Image (tube, rainbow, N blue to C red; front, top):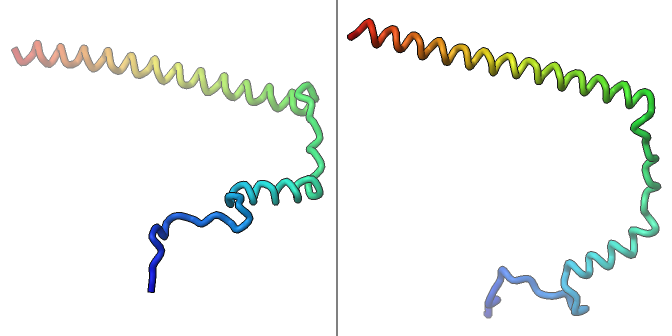
Length: 93
């Protein structure tokens, strides 16, 4: 009984094409007949989408302002912590 020399290697299909080429050819044969109709184009300037985009931009601005406020609070806390460390260091000396 003989075992395959390299069992992890795939054999080429009998037609001489590699598996991926054969799959590609088969996909091309079927794609033209079965392609779905294209999606309708949407206009960004449409009123409903424009209003939605405005709300999204307002939300982004609000979140940005909150993050800036949080950043300023962290800077203030860091400064206060440094001040407290200096006070404690001066008290211990």
